[in-house]
Image 1: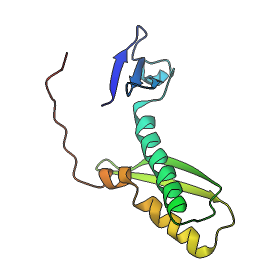
Image 2 (image 1 turned 90 degrees about the vertical axis):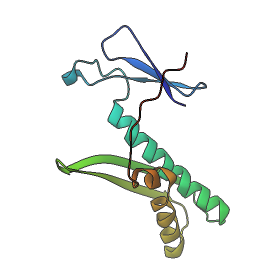
Image 3 (image 1 turned 30 degrees about the vertical axis):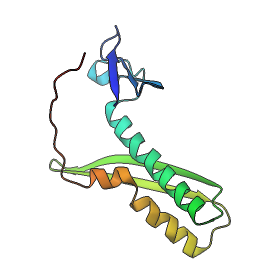
Amino acid sequence: MIRTRSLPQPYRLTVTNGRQEIPADAPIEKGGSSGGFGAHELLEAALAACLNMAVRMHAAQHAIPLEAVETGVSIVRPDPQSVRFEYSLKLSGPLSPQQLEALECAARTCPISQTLSKRLEFRSTPHAA
């Protein structure tokens, strides 16, 4: 479970998984100090990390000579009712066209993109002490 803890500065907080901690904050234009990742940036980061790992795992499982992966993710809102995640992949290594295609396919099936593609619900649970 991911947990957050507020800090004394307006909207500043830490995000932890119990092992690592990262700072988060609202942007200056929303009253924060931009002293950490914004909430939407964390969502983009989750997808970018998953895309990167999925491609690398697929390469390792299939002995594809992938040397490095760079991913970029942006949230785009084409209209008030829609949200689109746009991503880019930069794959390095002596890769054939077939290997590139296989790695791009692996990216499209990363678990975070699969989760975000489903119907979402939000439910509050009682706070555990």
